[in-house]
Image 1 (cartoon, rainbow, N blue to C red):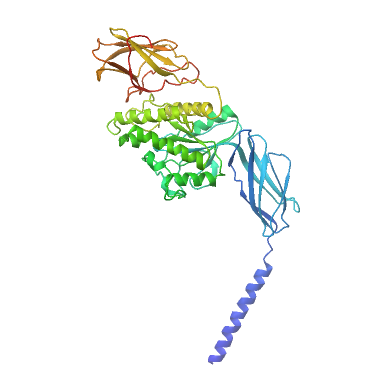
Image 2 (cartoon, helix red, strand yellow):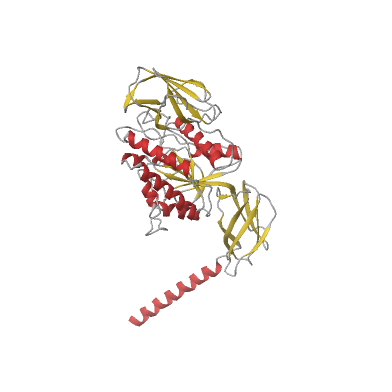
Length: 470
């Protein structure tokens, strides 16, 4: 009886195996196909100085001899051949920027093809810094252009269309820069202005992290390539996105101001950061100025020191490009650029800095305070260098006599390069004049140049007032 049961079990198992084999043999064989790994839709490839680029083509052929051809933007076909294992890699040289479909096709089976939509050749920018670089606005901006769609190499290392939140933490790979509160930002608006001016697609790589000091952004000599550091993660992501970018956009310094990092130390760290990026990535850093702040959280002298250090570093270091001045945007007791009108102003100034500092446009020079003369009574005439000023009421100035504040009753731009300050009383002691000291510039009619860009005058701290013409 036991032998008979065992024989039945063996026969049942054999029948099951035969049925499975029959099912497998009846399954239709897989037809020829192409798996295209690169490029991806909405990917942007960084153009060179002549506007040209090389698009990396990679993937695998399945079920045919591996003879392929590829083209971009309806241009001439380029032939390529896969290896024996079906894998293929090639570089397609393209002339001129733009955004168009990339098509790859089997030469043996013309119906076997893949079309990757919106592959671009243009400019890629890395976003670094703190929470204002990451974005904390409730309003989610969008990029607009009649032809192009801006790209984003997201925190999940995937290409997609640019949209807020640009620093979205969903699927983030390098958690060192994760920002759970990422929201609306200036970057889609910056993309809109750059695409309108340059007529090329742009893309961004978000790498910012809220509440970190400049020291955290430096390359760690003990682990220079580690993606567990902000610098190492940034370099890894640049390489994952294609290896070449136009520049790094840095908006950073609030934490250093809060902890009263000395201006000399901050400037050294900023310049070191720029040197390391030039060595590892071959790009310059555009430095945005930290803006308005809550005085109970960020000490005004700390903010003044960081602003001055960043400004001086941009004056003396060619690896650094002066970015937007933001001190006059009134955040009304906050420290995040979150309102649509403030985002628009900041984005407009970022675009001006990029166009003038990186892309060779002839832009107006931001006015700069260069001297001041006291009339011996109750007025000071302040002189500026740079583009001509808009005539009218002025604000954002502070005056000290012997280190004590002096009330400025009113101020007026009286000429293309002069502002007159009227004091409430005759001062006593050595005079100094400042522009944008602390929160003095927030919401004030600070001097601006006359072009449509309306760039504000640079901040200045405690410039000595003379008693004879400068």
